[in-house]
Image (cartoon, rainbow, N blue to C red; front, side, top):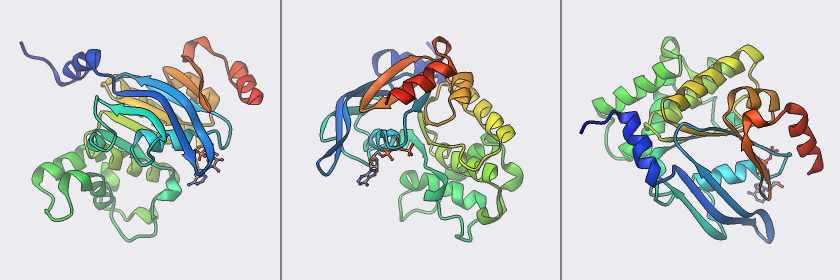
Amino acid sequence: MRYSFTSSIQDSAVQTPLVLAQDVRVHYGHREIISGLDMKVSPGEFIALVGANGAGKTTLLRTLMGLISPSSGTVSILGRSPIAAREKIGYVPQKHYFEWSFPITVKDAVLTGRTRAIGWFRRPSTDDWVSVFRAIERSGITHLQDRVVGELSGGQRQRVLLARALASDPSLLLLDEPFTGVDAPTQDSLNELYTSLAEEGLGIVMSTHDMLSALTHCSRICGVRGNLALDAPAHQLSVEELHRWLREA
Ligand code: ATP
């Protein structure tokens, strides 16, 4: 029997979730930031991670990514450790984590998203460049591919970071506050892009402070307060309820 790419991702996900976090605890020194968190993400979900400043959203994303090791509990990505599954994870960090003054073109910046696939000692192959140009096209920045990254606007930079994350052909996309410094129309078009990527089978977890756009575009809202103190389908919540939940923190 033949399967399409998307249906084979979804079929395998019946047995193996994209993300499975169980009783995860994360400490910075003696301070517990994440306390006994359980989380499951399936392909096609577009999840908004909300919570007060300092609640632990970035910490959770970095833990799912394997950049932070939990003090206890387990995280698996497609049934493997985050480190082993790293190529399957696309991470869009907050914009200030990227060195925009570096004199590098968009296509070379996007190629850095394939460093793990290429390794440090091999030249990029034709297949690597095919993935790079596909990610650039998917992110809507083909017309910018030869521009230097430092010349770009906030919204354009956000698309470069997205293309860089897509360049490794991930199954899971982690977005850390992707709307900082982005105007409202650009935010809407980025949200539409994330939605269509989720419809194609990608699982997306996005930390955000914009409750209205989270409710409008995301399928599920997860609220971080030590653990996932809130976890509900977006259509069951209102902006007022979300703001009330945040104030209770
Ligand atoms: P924001 O919405 O403001 O971005 P957040 O929910 O993403 O916040 P985190 O950045 O995960 O929160 O930080 C959670 C807590 O951990 C904060 O109190 C922060 O000061 C602290 N923290 C973050 N990184 C470190 C670190 N490397 N060492 C020690 N403490 C840290």
